[in-house]
Amino acid sequence: MLTTVDAFDRIGEENAFAVLARATALADQGRDIINLGIGQPDFRTPEHIVEAAVRALKDGHHGYTPSVGILPLREAVARDLHRRYGASVDPGLVMIMPGGKVTMYAAIRLFGEPGAEILYPDPGFPIYRSMIEHTGATPVPVPIREANGFAFSAEETLGLITPRTRLLIINSPANPTGGVTPKAEIDKLVAGLAAYPHVALMSDEIYDHFVFDGERHQTLLAYPEIRDRLILLNGWSKTYAMTGWRLGYSIWPKSLYESVRKLSVNAWSCVNAATQFAGIAALDGPQDAVAAMVAEFDRRRHIVVEGLNALPGISCATPKGAFYAFPNVAGTGWGSAKALASALLEEVGVAVIGGPDFGVHGEGYIRLSYANSAENIRKALERMDGFLRQSKAA
Image (cartoon, rainbow, N blue to C red; front, side, top):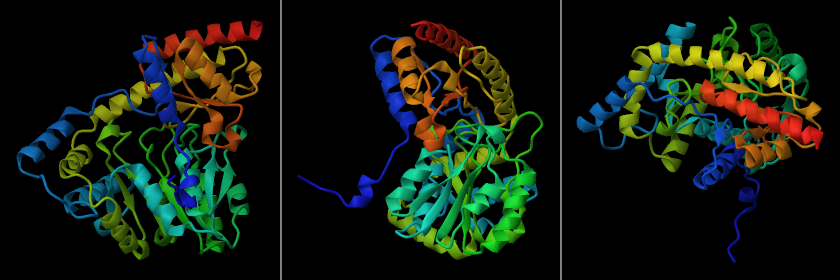
């Protein structure tokens, strides 16, 4: 019997894909399934982006590219960040990645080892903890609380830092909660980090376009005092409905860039050429489709929040960003949020994700993605209402 090294026994997974697989299997059996589980925009990639990729293929861009990405795309990233945030970014510190998870892996791999501690949001994207444990480092959850608007607390976060802390991961707008951390709280965090120069930061800003109710996204690039230890994660998957294109980018401190370049050479060589040209078209081209998508998500957000708060035993804080709702289901009588999520899929064909799949502080919650049509969302809420009333009566 083959055995693997211990590090592979410590790898977790993203249960949204397991739920997707089960939902797909049920649909293949003829069941009518509404998937509110997967975080994938239900829009087509804008046509001018698709055309740019086709044109790149026809023009002969079929070979390897530099492992860090083609320079025109890295320059487009720098232009976009300057245009939107006034941030000055050196294209020589931008790295093009095959998706956002690769930046997570690289950052955690750089700092994770036995004896090290890495702080991450909980509830949060499950790959954070999975990769921390894979490296042998100790995962230290930063509680993300409903009472705080699902924003992180700078004071609580800083209080978790020890001499063994190597990396702090933050995510705003946040998956799974939809929380947006206010600028004032981020200001406090950055100021407090002056006392901990040994701690690097990874800011996951993949949902930076999806901010509602007049809020503004506060990028960590706006703080020059931490730029020498800041890793920024972003990409095209959510903003341009390009999840299947596998295209992301990261910005690195100069001291780390060469290490990540060598990792890319060893692990993924480069991102495919045609996709990179599509990425240029996305950033430099018209943004009408993005604005329309964000407006539609905002409309659905109101439908979801109003509908969830009308369900028996459920209360839902209004998410300020991303395209997720994270309702509190403690009042339903279900002691396990994962059991409730499973029952909703199996019994009434509504796929959602149990809060514990996002961390120990996720118990008592489920995550719904409103990256589905308003019609399907309303239908799903009706099914959930009938199920909860029946199960409560039973």
